Image 1 (cartoon, helix red, strand yellow):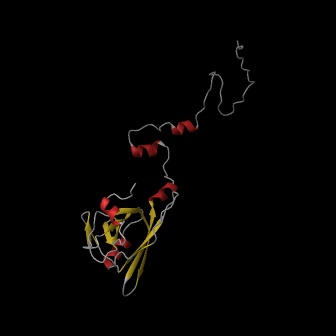
Image 2 (cartoon, rainbow, N blue to C red):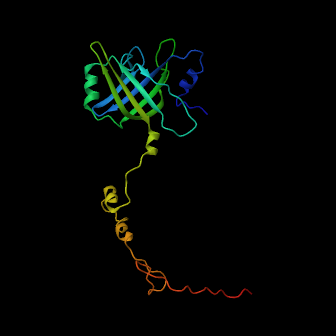
Image 3 (cartoon, helix red, strand yellow):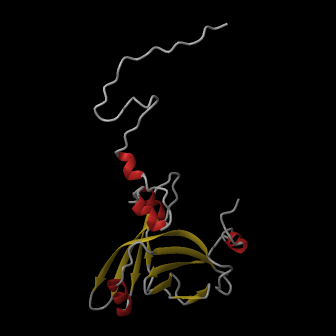
Length: 209
């Protein structure tokens, strides 16, 4: 079973030399940034990806046999003031980051097919290093599996249920159940607070025939 969506990509990786380009999408609030590891602009999916000098580095991407959240760090170098203003002024935390790989025809250096998505996650921590000549941004991103370890913060209460559906009364008895006095069996037997159990009557079974 192949892991590739497009057959031309599956064929390309079988060659002795495989030229490729990494594509990075960062979903900032003001608009998505489209970056690539190439030395020229690429267009696919209706989007224009900026070349090397903007997306200049990435930590190793490895596969594991267990379900763990893998963190990646992307380095954006040669950053202009416009991008710095974007990253400084926006709430980026928790927004989408997508890494794809595109394989190239070694003759004309064009994409043989649409790039394959190899990693998706959420933007986490952004660090900026600026000096007189150039600036760089290091962006740490977390895999979506990190959400498995986070509590939802949701309560099984009427108030929270009404945020989902203002007409839903499924949990309207939760508060009263917490202080409910329950009477079992004979209606004269109270098992509520202060109840003292009496003698237990033995259970008589019919003889076995």
